[in-house]
Image 1 (tube, rainbow, N blue to C red):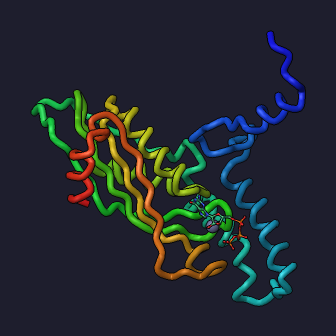
Image 2 (cartoon, rainbow, N blue to C red; image 1 turned 180 degrees about the vertical axis):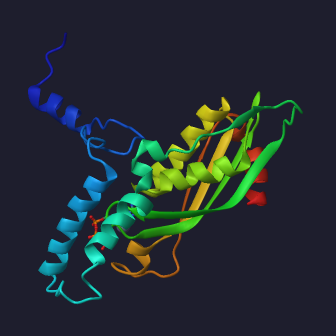
Length: 218
Ligand SMILES: Nc1nc2c(ncn2[C@@H]2O[C@H](COP(=O)(O)OP(=O)(O)OP(=O)(O)O)[C@@H](O)[C@H]2O)c(=O)[nH]1
Ligand SMILES: [Zn+2]
């Protein structure tokens, strides 16, 4: 083997980024019950409010720590818990439908993982069935499940894409998400007009014409 200077190896090591579409979770992520998580978050959120100088004996504020904790665990971030993953009913494609199916304008209500502020928009999903078709509402449910986590839009797009590919046993899936990030529109740079679009596709959608047909429909 060639004699590679140690410094160069270190630099190469730093440059190598492991890619993963999994949401980064701690090994003990599922050790606690929802009730235990709510109690812990409420305690810490009360400390945040107190640090801000708020009086938690005020009758309007006193319920807020628990309200926020419940909202995180049971609503906004319920997609962190695999127990909440939707059952995906797929059916045999008995009728041999071979064209594109598009489920468009699916509501996306997520939260950006950098600021915990809303990311709100629409997802458009298309696929070309092979042997199986999926219950329509399950497409919306997949989007909902992965949106209910602290997210970046890129990962959300890839997670939905990957789940559909697996459920349907086909590579011919396309996912587009168009969303407003409140961390961009309501604070920081405060650009009210900008939206972010992400896209992933595979299989037959590698064909530009098919992709354009899909995009025209959305
Ligand atoms: N790639 C990507 N970035 C995101 C997403 N949601 C939020 N961000 C960005 O994450 C970045 C975090 O940057 P930082 O510089 O650490 O945070 P900041 O100081 O609050 O940055 P500003 O928003 O520019 O004020 C910001 O540029 C956000 O716009 C997302 O879904 N994908
Ligand atoms: Zn953000």
